[in-house]
Each structure stands twice: as C-alpha cells, then as structure tokens.
Amino acid sequence: MVKYPIKRKPHEKITNYANLGMTLESDIEQTNQYYLDHNIAVIHKKPTPIQVVNVSYPARNKAKIVEAYYKTPSTTDFNGIYKGKYIDFDAKETNSKTSMPLKNVHPHQIEHLRNVESQGGIAFLIVHFKQYNEYFLLPFDILSTFWDSQHEKTGRKSIPYLTFKKSAYIIPFGFQPRLDYLSIIKQHFLDK
Image (cartoon, rainbow, N blue to C red; front, side, top):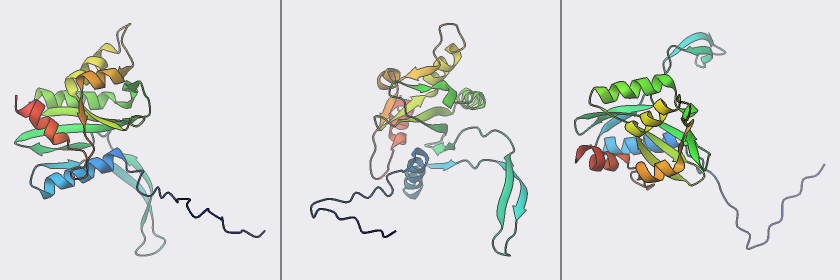
C-alpha cells in the first residue's frame, strides 16, 4: 500500500494543539512557581505517599517501579503559607455544565479541610468548569454546607454551577500568574 501525502489547499491552516491540554494542576503549579519566584508565597503540591513493593532493574541505570501502593489516602493537593496564613486546597475539574458532583471530593479531604479551618487556616477548592473554561475559588464553608446536606433526604449530590456563579470567586486566567487565586485570598479572606 502506498501512502501519498495529504494535499492541502494553500490557504488551509494547520492547527497545532500541542500544549493545549494543560491540566488544572499544572496551571496551579506554574502559578505557585510564579508566587515563589516573586517572593509572594510558598505553596507546593504535596507528594502522594506510596509504598514501593517491586522494582525491575533491566539495566544498572534504568530502575523501574513495577508495583507500588498508596500508603494512606492523600489529603489535598496543595498547601503552603501566604502572608503568615496557612492555606490548604484541592483542585477539581468537571465536564458538567450544570454542577460539580460531590463524589469528586472524598470524605477524608472534607475532614482534612475542616481541621485546617478549625485551626485558623484558609481552606478551599479551585474548581475548573471545562465546558465554560471558567475557574472558581470555592470557600470551604460553601463546600461543607453542600457536603453536610447531601445526606439529608432533600440534599443534593452536587454543587450547582449557579452557586459557583453567585457565591464562589471567579479566578481570571492569565499569563503571569496563570491562575491568580491569591489575589482573591487577599481581598476576601485577609483584608476583611
């Protein structure tokens, strides 16, 4: 079988989709690096604790982990300090146009964020609605209200998109920093 080159019209533009698949976590990591480089805050992604069980050594310098297990459930994705305040948060994405399912958040994460708040820290989620390409900072008090009410008979199993529009804070997407969530923390949590 002979494969001939695809002929394109001279005006036909080739679209390159490289790097368009940036994930929410990598956008936050780039933002955190900007904060660190500019001495604004120290916030890092927490490593997931794993127990390595089996390693393959095909060559002396090419060790490969073949089998590993999570030691304990991870709490949240990010934590650090900003203007003397401890902050702790998780990043969530949803493809839904109408809501963020509460099943995206795990009970141990709620317990952890609740403990952070009880000790005076700032706890929240950063939620990306992919369908609208919108980013929100959702304070823990709103998350916990929906979480606690989901177990009641009339409780929802998700947080409506309209709640995000009305009660959460939209995070503008930019270049440097990519997702400036600390400006929201400063304005709505620290400057009160």
